[in-house]
Image 1 (spheres, chains in turn yellow, orange):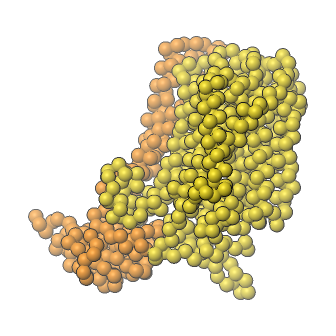
Image 2 (cartoon, chains in turn brown, orange):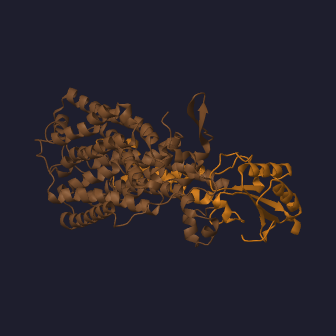
Length: 449
Length: 181
Protein backbone atom coordinates (compact mmCIF):
# COMPACT_ATOMS: atom_id res chain seq x y z
CA UNK A 1 0.00 0.00 0.00
CA UNK A 2 1.24 3.47 -0.87
CA UNK A 3 0.27 5.13 2.38
CA UNK A 4 -1.14 8.64 2.39
CA UNK A 5 0.87 11.26 4.21
CA UNK A 6 0.14 10.80 7.90
CA UNK A 7 -0.74 14.46 8.38
CA UNK A 8 -3.66 14.11 5.99
CA UNK A 9 -5.29 11.39 8.11
CA UNK A 10 -5.10 13.27 11.39
CA UNK A 11 -6.62 16.63 10.64
CA UNK A 12 -8.33 18.35 13.51
CA UNK A 13 -12.04 18.99 13.19
CA UNK A 14 -12.25 21.08 16.38
CA UNK A 15 -10.74 23.57 15.95
CA UNK A 16 -10.94 22.79 12.25
CA UNK A 17 -7.70 22.65 10.32
CA UNK A 18 -7.52 25.76 8.18
CA UNK A 19 -4.98 25.82 5.37
CA UNK A 20 -3.05 28.99 4.76
CA UNK A 21 -2.14 30.76 1.57
CA UNK A 22 1.53 30.71 0.58
CA UNK A 23 3.68 33.19 2.41
CA UNK A 24 5.74 34.84 -0.31
CA UNK A 25 8.04 37.81 -0.40
CA UNK A 26 10.13 39.45 -3.08
CA UNK A 27 13.14 38.79 -0.84
CA UNK A 28 12.88 35.11 -1.76
CA UNK A 29 15.13 34.43 -4.75
CA UNK A 30 12.63 32.23 -6.59
CA UNK A 31 9.79 34.70 -6.12
CA UNK A 32 11.98 37.60 -7.25
CA UNK A 33 12.95 35.62 -10.35
CA UNK A 34 9.30 34.82 -11.12
CA UNK A 35 8.34 38.46 -10.62
CA UNK A 36 11.13 39.55 -12.98
CA UNK A 37 10.03 37.00 -15.58
CA UNK A 38 6.43 38.10 -15.18
CA UNK A 39 7.45 41.70 -15.71
CA UNK A 40 9.40 40.64 -18.79
CA UNK A 41 6.29 38.86 -20.08
CA UNK A 42 4.16 41.99 -19.65
CA UNK A 43 6.78 44.17 -21.35
CA UNK A 44 7.14 41.76 -24.27
CA UNK A 45 3.37 41.57 -24.66
CA UNK A 46 3.12 45.35 -24.83
CA UNK A 47 6.02 45.48 -27.30
CA UNK A 48 4.24 42.93 -29.50
CA UNK A 49 0.99 44.88 -29.31
CA UNK A 50 2.71 48.08 -30.37
CA UNK A 51 5.04 46.71 -33.02
CA UNK A 52 3.18 43.74 -34.46
CA UNK A 53 -0.58 44.38 -34.30
CA UNK A 54 -2.17 42.62 -37.25
CA UNK A 55 1.07 40.96 -38.40
CA UNK A 56 0.18 37.28 -38.24
CA UNK A 57 3.71 35.89 -38.51
CA UNK A 58 4.80 38.06 -35.60
CA UNK A 59 2.11 36.41 -33.49
CA UNK A 60 3.23 32.87 -34.36
CA UNK A 61 5.23 32.30 -31.18
CA UNK A 62 2.67 34.05 -28.96
CA UNK A 63 0.19 31.54 -30.45
CA UNK A 64 2.51 28.78 -29.29
CA UNK A 65 2.42 30.29 -25.79
CA UNK A 66 -1.37 30.58 -25.97
CA UNK A 67 -1.69 26.90 -26.87
CA UNK A 68 0.89 26.03 -24.21
CA UNK A 69 -1.21 27.77 -21.54
CA UNK A 70 -4.37 26.07 -22.82
CA UNK A 71 -2.56 22.73 -22.65
CA UNK A 72 -1.07 23.10 -19.19
CA UNK A 73 -2.69 25.64 -16.87
CA UNK A 74 -6.13 25.37 -18.43
CA UNK A 75 -6.04 21.57 -18.41
CA UNK A 76 -4.97 21.30 -14.75
CA UNK A 77 -8.40 22.06 -13.16
CA UNK A 78 -9.72 18.93 -14.89
CA UNK A 79 -7.80 16.90 -12.31
CA UNK A 80 -9.84 18.47 -9.52
CA UNK A 81 -13.06 17.66 -11.37
CA UNK A 82 -12.09 14.13 -12.39
CA UNK A 83 -10.97 13.18 -8.89
CA UNK A 84 -14.19 14.56 -7.39
CA UNK A 85 -16.25 12.68 -9.93
CA UNK A 86 -14.36 9.44 -9.27
CA UNK A 87 -14.24 10.08 -5.50
CA UNK A 88 -10.45 9.83 -5.52
CA UNK A 89 -9.44 10.90 -2.03
CA UNK A 90 -5.79 10.65 -2.96
CA UNK A 91 -6.23 13.91 -4.86
CA UNK A 92 -7.52 15.91 -1.90
CA UNK A 93 -4.26 17.84 -1.37
CA UNK A 94 -4.00 18.53 -5.12
CA UNK A 95 -7.51 19.72 -5.93
CA UNK A 96 -6.94 23.34 -4.97
CA UNK A 97 -3.51 23.38 -6.63
CA UNK A 98 -5.13 22.18 -9.84
CA UNK A 99 -8.08 24.57 -9.52
CA UNK A 100 -5.78 27.54 -8.85
CA UNK A 101 -4.42 27.17 -12.37
CA UNK A 102 -7.72 28.70 -13.52
CA UNK A 103 -6.23 32.07 -12.53
CA UNK A 104 -3.15 32.04 -14.83
CA UNK A 105 -5.40 30.56 -17.52
CA UNK A 106 -6.96 34.02 -17.78
CA UNK A 107 -3.78 35.10 -19.54
CA UNK A 108 -4.84 33.01 -22.53
CA UNK A 109 -7.66 35.45 -23.20
CA UNK A 110 -5.22 38.36 -23.19
CA UNK A 111 -3.21 36.54 -25.85
CA UNK A 112 -6.17 35.41 -27.90
CA UNK A 113 -7.45 38.90 -28.77
CA UNK A 114 -4.44 40.19 -30.77
CA UNK A 115 -3.91 36.75 -32.27
CA UNK A 116 -7.47 36.56 -33.56
CA UNK A 117 -7.17 40.13 -34.84
CA UNK A 118 -4.27 39.08 -37.04
CA UNK A 119 -6.15 36.28 -38.83
CA UNK A 120 -7.02 36.68 -42.51
CA UNK A 121 -10.63 36.57 -43.73
CA UNK A 122 -12.29 33.16 -43.75
CA UNK A 123 -13.30 33.34 -47.38
CA UNK A 124 -11.08 31.25 -49.61
CA UNK A 125 -9.60 29.02 -46.94
CA UNK A 126 -10.74 25.87 -45.19
CA UNK A 127 -12.56 26.61 -41.95
CA UNK A 128 -15.18 25.41 -39.54
CA UNK A 129 -17.68 28.15 -40.06
CA UNK A 130 -19.33 27.42 -43.45
CA UNK A 131 -19.81 31.07 -44.36
CA UNK A 132 -21.19 32.08 -40.96
CA UNK A 133 -20.62 35.80 -41.04
CA UNK A 134 -21.86 37.01 -37.67
CA UNK A 135 -18.68 37.05 -35.64
CA UNK A 136 -16.74 33.96 -36.68
CA UNK A 137 -14.03 33.25 -35.85
CA UNK A 138 -13.14 36.22 -33.62
CA UNK A 139 -16.30 36.46 -31.53
CA UNK A 140 -17.05 32.75 -31.49
CA UNK A 141 -13.56 31.73 -30.36
CA UNK A 142 -13.31 34.52 -27.81
CA UNK A 143 -16.73 33.60 -26.42
CA UNK A 144 -15.84 29.91 -26.21
CA UNK A 145 -12.64 30.67 -24.34
CA UNK A 146 -14.47 33.14 -22.08
CA UNK A 147 -17.01 30.44 -21.16
CA UNK A 148 -14.20 28.05 -20.29
CA UNK A 149 -12.35 30.62 -18.18
CA UNK A 150 -15.55 31.74 -16.46
CA UNK A 151 -16.33 28.13 -15.56
CA UNK A 152 -12.81 27.60 -14.21
CA UNK A 153 -13.02 30.72 -12.07
CA UNK A 154 -16.48 29.76 -10.80
CA UNK A 155 -15.15 26.34 -9.81
CA UNK A 156 -12.27 27.92 -7.93
CA UNK A 157 -14.51 30.54 -6.33
CA UNK A 158 -17.14 28.13 -5.05
CA UNK A 159 -14.66 25.58 -3.75
CA UNK A 160 -12.66 28.28 -1.96
CA UNK A 161 -15.59 29.97 -0.20
CA UNK A 162 -15.68 27.71 2.91
CA UNK A 163 -11.94 28.24 3.41
CA UNK A 164 -12.08 31.98 2.90
CA UNK A 165 -15.34 32.93 4.57
CA UNK A 166 -14.24 32.64 8.20
CA UNK A 167 -16.75 32.85 11.05
CA UNK A 168 -20.39 33.69 10.24
CA UNK A 169 -20.15 37.00 12.12
CA UNK A 170 -17.53 38.12 9.62
CA UNK A 171 -19.71 37.22 6.64
CA UNK A 172 -22.74 38.89 8.20
CA UNK A 173 -20.81 42.08 8.76
CA UNK A 174 -19.96 42.32 5.09
CA UNK A 175 -21.71 44.52 2.57
CA UNK A 176 -24.34 43.00 0.32
CA UNK A 177 -22.08 42.36 -2.69
CA UNK A 178 -19.23 41.01 -0.63
CA UNK A 179 -21.64 38.65 1.09
CA UNK A 180 -22.76 37.54 -2.32
CA UNK A 181 -19.16 36.67 -3.17
CA UNK A 182 -18.96 34.60 0.00
CA UNK A 183 -22.31 32.91 -0.77
CA UNK A 184 -23.56 34.16 2.62
CA UNK A 185 -21.63 31.23 3.97
CA UNK A 186 -22.69 29.79 7.33
CA UNK A 187 -22.13 26.07 6.73
CA UNK A 188 -25.69 24.75 6.60
CA UNK A 189 -26.22 21.21 5.35
CA UNK A 190 -27.99 22.67 2.35
CA UNK A 191 -25.06 24.95 1.51
CA UNK A 192 -22.65 22.02 1.68
CA UNK A 193 -24.84 19.97 -0.58
CA UNK A 194 -25.25 22.76 -3.11
CA UNK A 195 -21.50 23.35 -3.05
CA UNK A 196 -20.76 19.70 -3.84
CA UNK A 197 -23.35 19.65 -6.61
CA UNK A 198 -21.99 22.89 -8.06
CA UNK A 199 -18.46 21.52 -8.12
CA UNK A 200 -19.57 18.48 -10.08
CA UNK A 201 -21.87 20.34 -12.46
CA UNK A 202 -19.42 23.09 -13.27
CA UNK A 203 -16.62 20.52 -13.55
CA UNK A 204 -18.59 18.70 -16.23
CA UNK A 205 -19.12 21.98 -18.09
CA UNK A 206 -15.43 22.75 -17.75
CA UNK A 207 -14.57 19.47 -19.47
CA UNK A 208 -17.08 20.22 -22.24
CA UNK A 209 -15.68 23.71 -22.67
CA UNK A 210 -12.10 22.48 -22.65
CA UNK A 211 -12.71 20.03 -25.50
CA UNK A 212 -14.66 22.65 -27.45
CA UNK A 213 -12.00 25.35 -27.12
CA UNK A 214 -9.34 22.92 -28.31
CA UNK A 215 -11.48 22.03 -31.30
CA UNK A 216 -12.02 25.67 -32.26
CA UNK A 217 -8.51 26.97 -31.69
CA UNK A 218 -6.64 24.05 -33.22
CA UNK A 219 -8.74 24.62 -36.32
CA UNK A 220 -8.82 28.41 -36.49
CA UNK A 221 -5.17 28.94 -35.49
CA UNK A 222 -3.82 25.76 -37.07
CA UNK A 223 -5.51 23.70 -39.73
CA UNK A 224 -7.39 26.48 -41.47
CA UNK A 225 -4.16 28.45 -42.04
CA UNK A 226 -2.16 25.61 -43.57
CA UNK A 227 -3.80 24.51 -46.83
CA UNK A 228 -4.03 20.75 -47.11
CA UNK A 229 -3.98 20.10 -43.36
CA UNK A 230 -7.26 18.31 -42.73
CA UNK A 231 -7.36 16.20 -39.62
CA UNK A 232 -10.32 15.22 -37.51
CA UNK A 233 -7.93 13.67 -35.01
CA UNK A 234 -5.79 16.73 -34.34
CA UNK A 235 -8.27 18.56 -32.04
CA UNK A 236 -8.57 15.43 -29.93
CA UNK A 237 -4.79 15.01 -29.96
CA UNK A 238 -4.46 18.59 -28.74
CA UNK A 239 -6.99 18.11 -25.92
CA UNK A 240 -5.56 14.77 -24.77
CA UNK A 241 -1.93 15.89 -24.83
CA UNK A 242 -3.12 18.97 -22.96
CA UNK A 243 -4.46 16.69 -20.25
CA UNK A 244 -1.10 14.89 -20.19
CA UNK A 245 0.66 18.21 -19.68
CA UNK A 246 -1.99 19.34 -17.17
CA UNK A 247 -1.23 16.28 -15.04
CA UNK A 248 2.49 16.94 -15.45
CA UNK A 249 2.27 20.56 -14.34
CA UNK A 250 0.15 19.58 -11.33
CA UNK A 251 2.70 16.96 -10.26
CA UNK A 252 5.51 19.43 -10.78
CA UNK A 253 3.70 22.00 -8.65
CA UNK A 254 3.03 19.39 -5.96
CA UNK A 255 6.73 18.51 -5.80
CA UNK A 256 7.67 22.19 -5.54
CA UNK A 257 5.03 22.67 -2.87
CA UNK A 258 6.47 19.81 -0.83
CA UNK A 259 9.96 21.23 -1.23
CA UNK A 260 9.25 24.88 -0.50
CA UNK A 261 6.07 24.99 1.59
CA UNK A 262 6.48 22.95 4.78
CA UNK A 263 2.91 23.73 5.85
CA UNK A 264 1.23 22.48 2.67
CA UNK A 265 3.98 20.07 1.68
CA UNK A 266 3.36 17.69 4.58
CA UNK A 267 0.12 16.54 2.93
CA UNK A 268 1.66 15.79 -0.46
CA UNK A 269 3.68 12.69 -1.16
CA UNK A 270 3.99 9.41 -2.94
CA UNK A 271 0.27 8.63 -2.77
CA UNK A 272 -0.43 11.45 -5.18
CA UNK A 273 2.53 10.48 -7.37
CA UNK A 274 1.37 6.88 -7.54
CA UNK A 275 -2.24 7.69 -8.42
CA UNK A 276 -1.53 10.46 -10.91
CA UNK A 277 1.44 8.48 -12.26
CA UNK A 278 -0.87 5.77 -13.55
CA UNK A 279 -2.99 8.32 -15.37
CA UNK A 280 0.15 9.96 -16.70
CA UNK A 281 1.31 6.66 -18.21
CA UNK A 282 -2.07 6.28 -19.89
CA UNK A 283 -1.93 9.84 -21.20
CA UNK A 284 1.62 9.26 -22.47
CA UNK A 285 0.45 6.21 -24.40
CA UNK A 286 -2.43 8.27 -25.75
CA UNK A 287 0.12 10.69 -27.20
CA UNK A 288 1.40 7.92 -29.42
CA UNK A 289 -2.05 6.54 -30.18
CA UNK A 290 -3.39 9.83 -31.51
CA UNK A 291 -0.18 10.77 -33.27
CA UNK A 292 -0.06 7.40 -35.00
CA UNK A 293 -3.77 7.39 -35.92
CA UNK A 294 -3.29 10.77 -37.58
CA UNK A 295 0.00 9.90 -39.25
CA UNK A 296 -0.90 6.46 -40.59
CA UNK A 297 -4.01 7.60 -42.43
CA UNK A 298 -2.17 10.30 -44.30
CA UNK A 299 0.89 8.17 -44.95
CA UNK A 300 -1.26 5.41 -46.41
CA UNK A 301 -3.68 7.62 -48.40
CA UNK A 302 -0.85 9.57 -50.02
CA UNK A 303 -2.95 12.62 -50.93
CA UNK A 304 -0.31 15.18 -51.96
CA UNK A 305 -1.90 18.11 -50.10
CA UNK A 306 -2.19 16.15 -46.85
CA UNK A 307 1.30 14.67 -47.21
CA UNK A 308 2.70 18.20 -47.62
CA UNK A 309 1.01 19.33 -44.42
CA UNK A 310 2.42 16.31 -42.60
CA UNK A 311 5.86 17.11 -43.98
CA UNK A 312 5.57 20.56 -42.44
CA UNK A 313 4.54 19.46 -38.95
CA UNK A 314 6.40 16.15 -38.72
CA UNK A 315 8.84 15.06 -41.36
CA UNK A 316 10.73 17.99 -42.90
CA UNK A 317 10.09 21.60 -41.94
CA UNK A 318 9.64 21.21 -38.20
CA UNK A 319 11.34 17.85 -37.77
CA UNK A 320 13.51 19.14 -34.93
CA UNK A 321 10.58 20.20 -32.70
CA UNK A 322 8.84 16.96 -33.67
CA UNK A 323 11.77 14.80 -32.58
CA UNK A 324 12.08 16.76 -29.34
CA UNK A 325 8.35 16.32 -28.76
CA UNK A 326 8.47 12.59 -29.43
CA UNK A 327 11.38 12.16 -27.04
CA UNK A 328 10.16 14.48 -24.28
CA UNK A 329 6.46 13.66 -24.36
CA UNK A 330 6.56 9.99 -25.25
CA UNK A 331 9.80 8.03 -25.42
CA UNK A 332 11.51 9.25 -22.25
CA UNK A 333 8.39 9.51 -20.09
CA UNK A 334 7.17 6.06 -21.12
CA UNK A 335 10.61 4.54 -20.64
CA UNK A 336 10.78 5.99 -17.15
CA UNK A 337 7.18 5.70 -16.01
CA UNK A 338 6.99 1.95 -16.59
CA UNK A 339 9.17 1.58 -13.50
CA UNK A 340 7.15 1.52 -10.28
CA UNK A 341 9.96 3.25 -8.46
CA UNK A 342 9.68 6.29 -10.71
CA UNK A 343 5.90 6.35 -10.78
CA UNK A 344 5.58 6.04 -7.02
CA UNK A 345 8.03 8.74 -6.04
CA UNK A 346 6.91 12.35 -6.18
CA UNK A 347 10.44 13.64 -6.69
CA UNK A 348 11.16 11.29 -9.58
CA UNK A 349 7.83 11.71 -11.31
CA UNK A 350 8.24 15.48 -11.03
CA UNK A 351 11.38 15.13 -13.15
CA UNK A 352 9.44 13.22 -15.78
CA UNK A 353 6.69 15.84 -15.60
CA UNK A 354 9.22 18.58 -16.30
CA UNK A 355 10.20 16.75 -19.50
CA UNK A 356 6.56 16.63 -20.60
CA UNK A 357 5.99 20.32 -19.87
CA UNK A 358 9.02 21.25 -21.97
CA UNK A 359 7.98 18.74 -24.62
CA UNK A 360 4.53 20.23 -25.10
CA UNK A 361 6.08 23.60 -25.85
CA UNK A 362 7.96 22.04 -28.79
CA UNK A 363 4.80 20.19 -29.78
CA UNK A 364 2.87 23.43 -30.03
CA UNK A 365 5.75 25.01 -31.98
CA UNK A 366 5.60 22.32 -34.65
CA UNK A 367 1.84 22.67 -35.01
CA UNK A 368 1.15 26.39 -34.75
CA UNK A 369 4.17 28.30 -36.04
CA UNK A 370 3.88 27.13 -39.63
CA UNK A 371 0.17 28.02 -40.01
CA UNK A 372 0.53 31.40 -38.30
CA UNK A 373 3.62 32.29 -40.32
CA UNK A 374 2.24 30.93 -43.59
CA UNK A 375 1.98 33.84 -46.06
CA UNK A 376 -0.55 32.04 -48.29
CA UNK A 377 -3.24 30.42 -46.16
CA UNK A 378 -5.81 30.37 -48.99
CA UNK A 379 -6.63 27.43 -51.24
CA UNK A 380 -6.69 23.71 -50.60
CA UNK A 381 -3.05 22.75 -51.01
CA UNK A 382 0.42 24.20 -50.54
CA UNK A 383 2.43 24.56 -53.73
CA UNK A 384 5.72 24.25 -51.92
CA UNK A 385 6.78 23.59 -48.36
CA UNK A 386 7.29 26.77 -46.34
CA UNK A 387 10.68 27.46 -44.83
CA UNK A 388 10.84 27.03 -41.07
CA UNK A 389 10.08 30.19 -39.13
CA UNK A 390 12.46 30.14 -36.20
CA UNK A 391 12.05 32.50 -33.26
CA UNK A 392 14.04 35.72 -33.11
CA UNK A 393 15.38 37.18 -29.86
CA UNK A 394 12.10 38.98 -29.15
CA UNK A 395 10.13 35.79 -29.64
CA UNK A 396 12.40 33.90 -27.24
CA UNK A 397 12.06 36.66 -24.66
CA UNK A 398 8.29 36.60 -25.19
CA UNK A 399 8.10 32.84 -24.64
CA UNK A 400 10.26 32.93 -21.52
CA UNK A 401 8.58 36.04 -20.13
CA UNK A 402 5.00 35.02 -20.74
CA UNK A 403 5.42 31.50 -19.41
CA UNK A 404 7.17 33.09 -16.42
CA UNK A 405 4.19 35.40 -16.08
CA UNK A 406 1.87 32.37 -16.06
CA UNK A 407 3.75 30.84 -13.12
CA UNK A 408 4.05 34.22 -11.39
CA UNK A 409 0.27 34.69 -11.57
CA UNK A 410 -0.19 31.18 -10.18
CA UNK A 411 2.09 31.88 -7.24
CA UNK A 412 0.38 35.20 -6.60
CA UNK A 413 -3.01 33.48 -6.61
CA UNK A 414 -1.63 30.86 -4.20
CA UNK A 415 -0.51 33.67 -1.91
CA UNK A 416 -4.11 34.96 -1.73
CA UNK A 417 -6.08 31.71 -1.71
CA UNK A 418 -5.03 28.68 0.39
CA UNK A 419 -3.25 26.07 -1.71
CA UNK A 420 -5.13 23.30 0.05
CA UNK A 421 -8.85 22.66 0.02
CA UNK A 422 -9.36 22.69 3.78
CA UNK A 423 -12.98 21.55 3.93
CA UNK A 424 -12.46 18.64 1.55
CA UNK A 425 -9.31 17.60 3.37
CA UNK A 426 -11.10 17.65 6.73
CA UNK A 427 -13.90 15.57 5.28
CA UNK A 428 -11.33 13.20 3.76
CA UNK A 429 -9.61 12.87 7.12
CA UNK A 430 -12.95 12.01 8.70
CA UNK A 431 -13.69 9.32 6.12
CA UNK A 432 -10.24 7.72 5.78
CA UNK A 433 -8.61 5.74 8.55
CA UNK A 434 -5.58 3.51 8.62
CA UNK A 435 -6.37 0.21 10.34
CA UNK A 436 -4.44 -2.91 11.23
CA UNK A 437 -5.62 -5.90 9.24
CA UNK A 438 -4.05 -9.16 10.45
CA UNK A 439 -0.36 -8.33 10.24
CA UNK A 440 -0.53 -5.43 7.85
CA UNK A 441 -2.04 -1.97 7.60
CA UNK A 442 -4.88 -1.09 5.31
CA UNK A 443 -6.67 2.10 4.47
CA UNK A 444 -10.38 2.06 5.20
CA UNK A 445 -12.22 4.56 3.05
CA UNK A 446 -15.80 5.75 3.42
CA UNK A 447 -17.53 6.93 0.26
CA UNK A 448 -20.95 8.11 1.34
CA UNK A 449 -22.09 10.20 -1.63
CA UNK B 1 -51.81 35.10 16.23
CA UNK B 2 -48.75 35.32 18.48
CA UNK B 3 -48.78 31.55 18.98
CA UNK B 4 -48.50 30.99 15.21
CA UNK B 5 -45.18 32.86 14.85
CA UNK B 6 -42.10 30.69 14.58
CA UNK B 7 -39.01 31.26 16.67
CA UNK B 8 -35.58 29.77 16.32
CA UNK B 9 -33.36 27.98 18.81
CA UNK B 10 -29.76 27.07 18.13
CA UNK B 11 -27.90 24.46 20.17
CA UNK B 12 -24.16 23.89 19.97
CA UNK B 13 -22.63 20.45 20.42
CA UNK B 14 -19.09 19.33 20.89
CA UNK B 15 -19.50 15.88 19.40
CA UNK B 16 -21.29 14.78 16.22
CA UNK B 17 -22.99 11.99 18.18
CA UNK B 18 -24.59 14.54 20.50
CA UNK B 19 -25.84 16.49 17.51
CA UNK B 20 -27.26 13.30 15.99
CA UNK B 21 -28.94 12.57 19.32
CA UNK B 22 -30.49 16.05 19.31
CA UNK B 23 -31.90 15.56 15.81
CA UNK B 24 -33.37 12.22 16.88
CA UNK B 25 -34.97 13.79 19.94
CA UNK B 26 -36.39 16.62 17.85
CA UNK B 27 -37.90 14.09 15.46
CA UNK B 28 -39.39 12.23 18.41
CA UNK B 29 -40.83 15.47 19.70
CA UNK B 30 -42.69 15.91 16.43
CA UNK B 31 -40.43 18.30 14.55
CA UNK B 32 -39.84 17.44 10.91
CA UNK B 33 -36.78 17.97 8.76
CA UNK B 34 -38.08 21.26 7.39
CA UNK B 35 -37.87 22.73 10.91
CA UNK B 36 -34.33 21.51 11.57
CA UNK B 37 -31.08 22.91 10.18
CA UNK B 38 -27.60 21.51 10.80
CA UNK B 39 -24.61 23.83 10.72
CA UNK B 40 -21.01 22.63 10.64
CA UNK B 41 -17.59 23.79 9.52
CA UNK B 42 -16.94 20.45 7.83
CA UNK B 43 -19.31 18.71 5.46
CA UNK B 44 -20.68 15.53 7.04
CA UNK B 45 -22.15 12.81 4.86
CA UNK B 46 -25.81 13.37 4.19
CA UNK B 47 -27.89 11.60 6.82
CA UNK B 48 -25.02 11.41 9.32
CA UNK B 49 -27.11 13.22 11.91
CA UNK B 50 -30.28 11.34 11.05
CA UNK B 51 -31.61 14.24 9.06
CA UNK B 52 -33.65 13.66 5.94
CA UNK B 53 -32.62 14.18 2.35
CA UNK B 54 -31.87 17.85 1.73
CA UNK B 55 -33.64 18.92 -1.43
CA UNK B 56 -32.27 21.53 -3.78
CA UNK B 57 -33.03 22.51 -7.33
CA UNK B 58 -29.55 23.30 -8.55
CA UNK B 59 -29.77 20.71 -11.30
CA UNK B 60 -32.78 22.46 -12.81
CA UNK B 61 -30.78 25.62 -13.44
CA UNK B 62 -28.36 24.25 -16.07
CA UNK B 63 -31.26 22.80 -18.02
CA UNK B 64 -33.11 26.11 -18.00
CA UNK B 65 -29.90 27.93 -18.91
CA UNK B 66 -29.08 25.48 -21.67
CA UNK B 67 -32.54 25.94 -23.19
CA UNK B 68 -32.21 29.74 -23.08
CA UNK B 69 -28.65 29.58 -24.45
CA UNK B 70 -29.69 27.31 -27.27
CA UNK B 71 -32.57 29.62 -28.15
CA UNK B 72 -30.20 32.59 -28.29
CA UNK B 73 -27.78 30.50 -30.38
CA UNK B 74 -30.52 29.58 -32.84
CA UNK B 75 -31.63 33.21 -33.09
CA UNK B 76 -28.03 34.33 -33.59
CA UNK B 77 -27.18 31.90 -36.36
CA UNK B 78 -30.51 31.77 -38.16
CA UNK B 79 -30.69 35.57 -38.07
CA UNK B 80 -27.19 35.90 -39.44
CA UNK B 81 -27.65 33.30 -42.16
CA UNK B 82 -31.01 34.59 -43.29
CA UNK B 83 -29.96 38.24 -43.28
CA UNK B 84 -26.92 37.44 -45.43
CA UNK B 85 -27.81 34.30 -47.37
CA UNK B 86 -24.71 32.76 -48.93
CA UNK B 87 -25.06 29.29 -50.35
CA UNK B 88 -21.91 27.37 -49.42
CA UNK B 89 -21.13 24.19 -51.33
CA UNK B 90 -24.76 23.80 -52.40
CA UNK B 91 -25.88 23.30 -48.80
CA UNK B 92 -29.05 24.88 -47.34
CA UNK B 93 -28.72 28.40 -45.96
CA UNK B 94 -29.34 27.07 -42.44
CA UNK B 95 -27.79 23.60 -42.33
CA UNK B 96 -27.59 21.78 -39.01
CA UNK B 97 -23.98 20.51 -39.31
CA UNK B 98 -22.82 24.04 -39.99
CA UNK B 99 -24.55 25.61 -37.02
CA UNK B 100 -23.91 22.94 -34.45
CA UNK B 101 -20.85 24.60 -32.90
CA UNK B 102 -22.71 27.88 -32.40
CA UNK B 103 -25.58 26.03 -30.77
CA UNK B 104 -23.11 24.14 -28.56
CA UNK B 105 -21.47 27.40 -27.54
CA UNK B 106 -24.77 29.14 -26.76
CA UNK B 107 -26.07 26.13 -24.87
CA UNK B 108 -22.91 25.80 -22.79
CA UNK B 109 -22.83 29.52 -22.01
CA UNK B 110 -26.44 29.47 -20.85
CA UNK B 111 -25.90 26.36 -18.75
CA UNK B 112 -22.80 27.78 -17.03
CA UNK B 113 -24.33 31.18 -16.30
CA UNK B 114 -27.52 29.67 -14.93
CA UNK B 115 -25.55 27.22 -12.79
CA UNK B 116 -23.68 30.12 -11.20
CA UNK B 117 -26.97 31.93 -10.63
CA UNK B 118 -28.43 28.70 -9.28
CA UNK B 119 -25.67 28.38 -6.70
CA UNK B 120 -26.37 31.93 -5.51
CA UNK B 121 -30.10 31.25 -5.40
CA UNK B 122 -29.77 27.90 -3.66
CA UNK B 123 -27.39 29.42 -1.10
CA UNK B 124 -30.43 31.44 -0.03
CA UNK B 125 -28.92 34.73 -0.96
CA UNK B 126 -29.14 37.42 0.13
CA UNK B 127 -30.46 35.98 3.41
CA UNK B 128 -29.36 32.85 5.20
CA UNK B 129 -30.27 31.20 8.46
CA UNK B 130 -31.29 33.43 11.33
CA UNK B 131 -29.30 32.48 14.41
CA UNK B 132 -25.60 31.81 14.19
CA UNK B 133 -22.61 31.46 16.43
CA UNK B 134 -18.93 31.78 15.62
CA UNK B 135 -18.16 28.62 17.58
CA UNK B 136 -19.60 26.68 14.63
CA UNK B 137 -16.64 27.78 12.55
CA UNK B 138 -14.41 26.52 15.39
CA UNK B 139 -15.69 22.99 14.90
CA UNK B 140 -18.80 22.83 17.06
CA UNK B 141 -21.94 21.54 15.45
CA UNK B 142 -25.04 23.67 15.47
CA UNK B 143 -28.58 22.32 15.44
CA UNK B 144 -31.11 24.98 14.68
CA UNK B 145 -34.82 24.41 15.04
CA UNK B 146 -37.76 26.60 14.05
CA UNK B 147 -40.70 26.12 16.38
CA UNK B 148 -44.01 27.81 16.96
CA UNK B 149 -44.20 29.68 20.24
CA UNK B 150 -46.27 26.99 21.94
CA UNK B 151 -43.83 24.24 20.81
CA UNK B 152 -40.72 26.12 21.88
CA UNK B 153 -40.45 24.35 25.28
CA UNK B 154 -40.58 20.94 23.54
CA UNK B 155 -37.77 21.98 21.23
CA UNK B 156 -35.72 23.33 24.10
CA UNK B 157 -36.12 20.12 26.11
CA UNK B 158 -35.14 17.97 23.13
CA UNK B 159 -32.04 20.05 22.46
CA UNK B 160 -31.02 20.19 26.14
CA UNK B 161 -31.37 16.44 26.60
CA UNK B 162 -28.59 15.93 24.06
CA UNK B 163 -26.13 17.87 26.28
CA UNK B 164 -25.30 20.99 24.29
CA UNK B 165 -22.52 23.31 25.37
CA UNK B 166 -24.83 26.22 24.71
CA UNK B 167 -28.39 26.91 23.70
CA UNK B 168 -29.22 30.19 22.02
CA UNK B 169 -32.35 32.09 21.17
CA UNK B 170 -32.69 35.47 19.52
CA UNK B 171 -32.39 37.06 22.96
CA UNK B 172 -29.09 35.32 23.78
CA UNK B 173 -27.89 32.24 25.60
CA UNK B 174 -30.49 30.26 27.48
CA UNK B 175 -27.83 28.35 29.38
CA UNK B 176 -25.18 30.78 30.60
CA UNK B 177 -23.83 34.26 30.21
CA UNK B 178 -24.27 35.66 26.73
CA UNK B 179 -21.19 36.26 24.67
CA UNK B 180 -22.66 35.38 21.39
CA UNK B 181 -25.46 36.66 19.28
